[in-house]
Length: 418
Image (cartoon, rainbow, N blue to C red; front, side, top):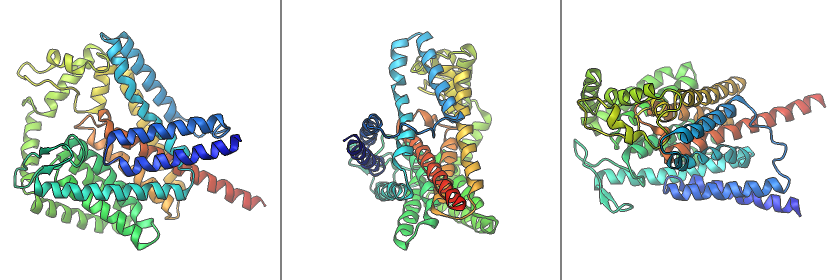
């Protein structure tokens, strides 16, 4: 009976996770509900006998995650608003997406199914976003989009803000590009290449400079990892992308140059330097525990530049933001689990010489993670629930791929011994 209950629970959890990949681009609430159902199914399966012997998560990555969570809780308790701060920390449950995806995507077929469903959803919303650019209509929120500087409108997809949409779709676009070459069948390859191309166009139509820059970086890195013979192709493609962007959105160039000048001066209240100085002063005054989660906005008036009248809810940089609200130890632990996951990805890639689908998935998770991290230099992307949950899913995909690789290696060793 327990075995049957466990099998049913795992099946429900897997379909729930597929539901997340299909629905995450449409609705964050829908994605969270699917995650909750997947976690419930895993719990039932655990008490039915499954997953009892899983030791896949005993590594330094999870140690740093645990320390990050622990110090965040301590910072909340010793802060000025412990009740509110602890309530805000409820969003840390999004970390659970990592083990959920790692456990439920237990073989290559399930990994491929989840990614295919995501590519379908991704392509549909990307097409919708490109349509938004020309129509200016946002029927999901019942509003008119902000006008772009050189015609058209700044797209948001189904998200509440174009920055969230841009960072999410820049990250997902690279994941699709990396997986596409190693998929079997022209239909699947066309789907993933199409999802990449249309979503990249949609990212450009957000006019979000950091998202576009991160996307370009991801494309270049993809060709770099594909081999030296593709470097020339990468440079040609990069030049073509820049040319297309300038043709489609010529105002982008002026915005980059104006922003660069503003940032070099660093005196304008809207500049990132001004915003970062606020967070750094906040952290310098509260180096161990920060001001407490959820208290950044209330303290920004005290620590902002004297010439500034702007109040921000975060530091527009994840490391500074975390150090400001939860102290230097939490920021160090945050960087710690980032270093650990990137190192694990690179080490696993070095072991895999054959250009298989699993290797492509691992490249995709690595590049998508780097794109996310680049966006976090000028935005607090980790504090953005929609994009953060997607990052957790990407890391879960990596751990699932790692389990598949280890399983195949054990099988190969058994065959050799036999």
